[in-house]
Structures are given as C-alpha cells and as structure tokens.
Image (tube, rainbow, N blue to C red; front, side, top):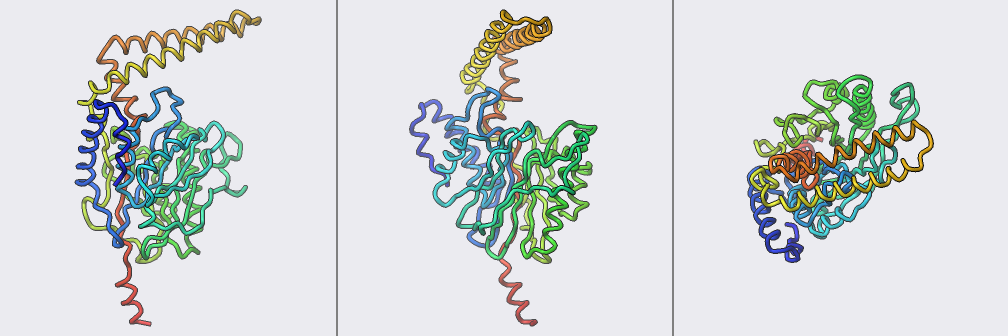
Length: 394
C-alpha cells in the first residue's frame, strides 16, 4: 500500500478531492484486479505513462495528486513494464518513495534522436515477489537484421529493453518496447511493422536455446487485432493475450500488448474473468463529472501556454526586424501569424466553458493520468506439485 503522507502538505480542497479520487480508484482496483498473493500468482502488466514527466507539451507537470494515483495503480502489480519515462527521473523517484522499500525499478538511459524522444523504458517491481536476476540489456540489431527505411539501415527508434527475473518457480526474460508509430499507412507504417517483426524474430530465436520463458510487452502501436503489426507477433510464434477492449483512453485502439514465448507447461493463466484486462482509469479519476474541480488548474495551464507563445512571437519579431533575405522574412511572418492564431484559439478556451471542458477530456487529463491504460494478466507461478509428480517418473 502506498504512503499517503504527502497528502498532508496539500491544500484542504485539493486533499479532499484527491482522497475522493483515491477511494474510487481503490474500489475499482479491488473489483477489477485480483489481490496479490504471497507465492501462488504473479500480477504482470504494462503501462505507457504519457510523457512521464517532461511537460514538453505545456499541459502542466504532474502534481502530488497525479503521482498518488499513479503509485496506487502500480502498487497493485507484482511487476510492471513502463514506457515513456522521460529524462527527468524526479517524478518516478517520488512515486517510488510513495511505493515504499519493497519496490525497486530498472530503467534505460534516454534514447537519442528524433524518433527516440529522449524516452526511457523500464520495469517497476515488488522485490518480495519478483527478483531481478542480474541480466539486463538493450536490444541492438546486427547489421544484417537492421530495418531498411527510405533506403537507409536503421536501428529501433527506441531501443527495446530486457531484464531477467524470477518469481517463484517461474523464470522469465521480460522485454518491453515502444514501437515507432510513423503514420497509419505507407512506408512509415511498414517501418512500424518491420520493428515489431525484428524484435519478435530476435527474441523468438533467443527463446529456442533459453531455459527461461520470454515475455514481450509494451506499446506496439497496434491499431487492431489482425493488422500487420499484430500478425507480426503471431507469425514469430508469440502467444498474444488479446485484451477485449482497447488500451488507449477511448478504448478504440489496441496499441499495448502482452505476448509470450514459453517453455512447455510453464505458462498458466489464472482462470478468472478478473485475471486479465485493461484498467479504465477515467472511471475513477479525472472523470467528466470532475471537470469543475479542475477548472482553475485548466485556466492556469492555458494562460501559461499563451504566455509561452507570446514570448516566442516576441523572439521571432526581433529576428524579423534584423532579417535580410526575403525568404527568411516570409518564414518568420508565417510563423508569427500561425502563433497569433494559436493564441486566439487558447483565449477562446478561456472564454468558453465547453471548449475548456473538451480540452480537459481530450488532452489535459491524459498528461496527468495517461492516454494509455494499464494492461495486465495474472500468471500461476507455483509449479511445485507438478515438479514432484515429475520426480516420481525419473
């Protein structure tokens, strides 16, 4: 159970709102995700926590309220793969402090380059249930397996990350990805499919000679079941857990996946409707009905956006005054006009409650919760009875 002592430092109005959200969230978690056991099962999942946490899109840094909700969700997992952890680890460290000493984490360095977005991949795990086995690595493709895109050989946009864990009798290599998105069709889409195929092929080959099971999870940017990306996993022999509902905030897309390449008789799902699924966090927190409680924060965020754009306009106007070439002047004038139009748009949000509410529902709350939803399965990890039966036969 997370430490809630940080709530004491909040203003009473914010504290009461957060407690209300926590109570709803805890009730939802109790209903939807099975309770963790000491040694019988493993609650395993994946969660892309949107831009956690760099505020590059100026929708406000995550608050104590936000981090408390995130910690409450993570605490229900024995081990969770996370994507989009950003350069600044301070918010993650605050969450880890809330989770307490039983939990630990492993993350990569940031991925450089335009496609990498300076993101990290990693794992957060309850040490009383999942033990890190000392092996960790990022998946780098050899020259003959690199992805050909626009005539160039490329590595993954964000390098997949893998670590070896053991929980009870279950040994597994846990790999997580954040696959390139690109575009819904054309060459950029094909690059996405190639990334999925390459990581699946690499791990499938590794799994053949490994005494560990292999679990591959993360944000694959798979839009729907049966698409090329989804089939790329199945063609490489991965058993894909098919979530019934999508894992984006509107539950219309199947971006996030959990898949398996396992040793014989070593994958057993807990047989229960509650043993796998997607957690719709907006049933409990940042609900539509909660909009009035966040209006002040929303208006503050919009004003910050306007001030930032105004500063950018001032900088470009200064450059325009010194510009010599006609092409540079044209480019700057076009940019200034576009930014002024943006200010007009944001001011309209301040003047219209309906527009502000739309911003809250479609964008703001996804940067304080996430635009992806946690996905989980529950696995059986106690094979002691089967092992004893085996010993009788040798």
